[in-house]
Length: 373
Ligand SMILES: *Cc1c(COP(=O)(O)O)cnc(C)c1O
Image (cartoon, rainbow, N blue to C red; front, side):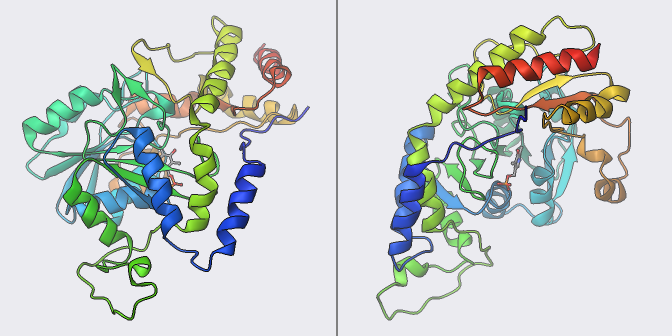
């Protein structure tokens, strides 16, 4: 049997939508993107959304719009995909990592407060695996010290905690529509905000810093002025067309992934040499990944044996302070962030996608138990 790590759920509706989008001569950011943005804002429950080319660019766009740059510090987590820190570096600011909670892998609020200096401008938390971080406390802390909050919500499209949704308490929330995410157009992203000024600024910065984008100029003879030094990260109508039909399936697909997770949990909890994160109360997880934790010196061998049995897995994530470019830049080697590194050395993400069949889930559990014994 072969078990993919992830399989998207795109079908005839999405294919038809792409075909239709190609009939329109206007392929870049236009009416279709606007339609997607409205649907996305409604789903998130925020005032404004902008479609962009990736979550990485969404974070960079938010940081630029908030005028965070050289000399500024952004407090974030080493237990994440590299993009979170790369976005901070892209604007010339300094990422300041703090260690995470052992039970969630999310940024530890106590460490955040200790890391605040007079140069700190923002907090950039990640909702790891789909479990929201303590955004209420982060937001309180940010108010106390006059800091901005940008959420890396790449795992957390559907997440809620204590009745708070992603994007609700922060300045901006950033989403990914990369291949393995809840909704996807291959590559893509979005940034949301409830601040109209910030929205307007990000909209300009999204298209080079030009005050009127191609769609506004289309069919007119008017020329443009450049008002800001911007980026080029606007979503195309083709990407938006693929995303729109997926919007109405978000919850159903999340529930299907939750079902897969609960079967894993039932079959794997209590096993010797396998750790699971506890289920959290007052938390609606995005169920983006299902990590298990094994003995660090056995991890790579376990993955190899699962691969031989046809089962694809992933590591989400090696603590990014241990990656070579960051080691060279910041010299925060092994031992600097023990909790993040502990997760990074032990984690294996199991296959997880909405259409995963019961026999495949059982097969993964069966093989895993076999490999572990
Ligand atoms: C996928 C991911 C990103 C990057 O998303 P892109 O759309 O590929 O730029 C950033 N942060 C986290 C936590 C992710 O999982």
